[in-house]
Length: 397
Ligand SMILES: C[C@H](O)[C@H](O)CC(=O)C(=O)O
Ligand SMILES: [Mg+2]
Image 1 (tube, rainbow, N blue to C red):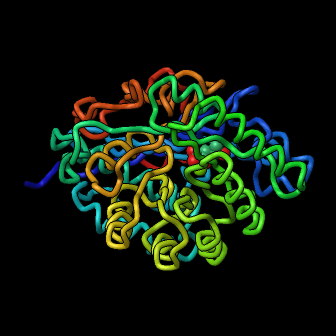
Image 2 (cartoon, rainbow, N blue to C red):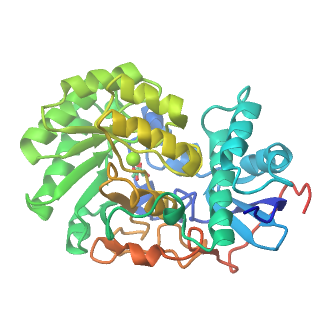
């Protein structure tokens, strides 16, 4: 049955948390001396905002059908991504049937390939793709997970990312992933402090809890190998995440060969498209891939990435992504659990991951979420009307 055609596309921006979850106020755990590739410069060590981690802000894409139904999505990208959506991508949507998401994705990707392929452009494409799936679900009166083939389990299980894995354990999560605070430029003293942080957290969580480490691209292979080996043997660290540059596929393959048998290497939140993930999979770079649904190309592309991973015997556990992850993860056998990013400034209370931008954003209770909480049309959330929005490049509609 032909669906109502697309009549307008709007790209809006918002500041203050939400999909650009690094855009938080001062004193938040997520900006507290976390190791990064920029930590080689002492002046950019204390705060990631100091080198501009939050310059983009949130992109909101709204796609309106002729019958007035509006699908929307949020991702990171702000005004630069809004320009790409309004001035470039919208031409592939206006007057089209929202069910043509394959052809629309293909046209968005190949028309931007000469300046895109990864990063900001793929964030913009992802935002459009997710808004399209939201619209499709709303027009068909079905949740996105039903459009993807339906849930393969009754509930989702979550691990939590934040500064307080011990609090995550008390809150019922299956594991806790903590940030790394010191990079190679801080030498052996920094390495000792990193190990002592992990040891202290292990003492607080006890042994019967997954403990993981997020390195946000800060390390080199040698440092990561030393850290991982000690943290595995001394503290039972379950995985080391995004240890080195996402461009260094060779380094990841080496790290995976180097870490103790049983320890997991994970990465992929800054990787994009089936071609990027094919590199990670074919070069045997990791055990779990972690595409961010708003950065990897959206649901249309994630379906392909996930099929590649499945055939390679790897798990897909999306980075963050809130509802965009939940609707996907519940439909795949090779996505057995999900990440929950703790956006409370002290990481000791559960608050919606993309707050304050979404209304109706589900959150785990005791580390779990019933699939019935996702049984609303589209992604099942609305844009919070109290959030200030701007439309920097209105082109039509
Ligand atoms: C905590 C990490 O540095 C980053 O902010 C989030 C992340 O990489 C993750 O959730 O994974
Ligand atoms: Mg990470």
